[in-house]
Amino acid sequence: MLAFDSSDTPPTTERAIKKPPHGNESYLALVWRRLRRSWTGMAGLVLVGLLLLMAVFADFFAPMDPKATDVGFAPPQVMSFHDKDGNFVFQPRVYALSDSEELDPVTFQPIVGMDYDNPRLLGFFVKGAEYKLFGLIPADRHFFGSTDGQPVHFLGTDKFGRDVLSRAIIGSRISLMIALTVVFIVTLIGTTVGMVSGYFGGTFDIWLQRFVELVLAFPQLPLYLALTSLIPVTAPTNVFLGFVIVVMSALGWAQMSREVRGKTLALARIDYVRAAMAVGATDRRIIMQHIFPNVMSHVIVAVTLAIPSVVLLESFLGFLGFAVKPPLISWGLMLQDTATYSVIGSYPWILSPVGFVLVTVFAFNALGDGLRDAVDPY
Image (tube, rainbow, N blue to C red; front, top):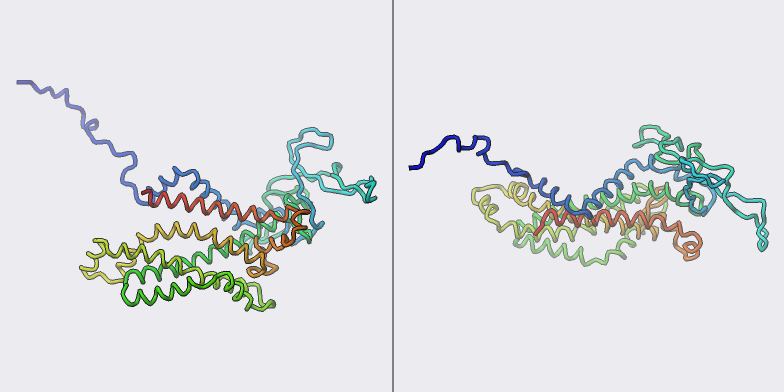
């Protein structure tokens, strides 16, 4: 017989089964771990965070007062690290345009050039135009601008001499507010209607879906233009803005409800839902405790993909003059200055709001694509 040596037995700590590196992760932790593997999803998440931060603190990030006027259609001022003699300097600066003493030999107009004798030094957290943070706290600090408070136009000015960059930053607040508000209302109505319709089914579902199809059958663009035209020009800006949000929401919830209804029809036939019905659970409990959590993954992805559509729609309607009225500022309203080809050809920096729209659409689409793969990797 073989003798058993107790010394061969490993210690209890060594014989213990090691805990898996990830343990019992929750569903949200698994989604986050899969999302981190997608560089496009993480890039979209970072850009979305920066856009929301810019919109919340728009007055702080805007280098100038968006309503202050200067020279009309002034070109963008380029930041330089060289002085007038060409020597490298550590503090960035811009040189304003000024009329020189020399005359153009053809037009006999003063030649416009850089004023190298009076540079405008740039810095962070500089004093500038006064504003109220969150509409309550008086402040005059800006994230970046000239140290002496002189006007600086990094993206040039519009036809009235207003700074394009400052107006685009302030306009992000209105554009994103419209998009987030519309998507919130669309999600709330569409998710509720879709779950109720898919769960109860029968005659109720048939008639409700006919109404949904009627809403989807409307040609949205002509209806947008017709409904927004009903508001008088003299109406307050808040009333006009609220009406636009209501119109967009009223025509946008139907598609969301159709998608949620399809998910609910599949979930209503799963065993645990039928077991809840068998034990006498109320319809409200089944919908909220069993169906709603399983539908949320699809809804979250649909929301991130719907926001870019609303941003594009607001920009288009604003360009036509049917979304936002002055004195409010939005990206679509700023694009009204690009209505003629002559303006675009002579002053291309007026198209700068298009860059903000493109970044916003890319950010939310990238985030939505990453979330879609993270929520349902199969």
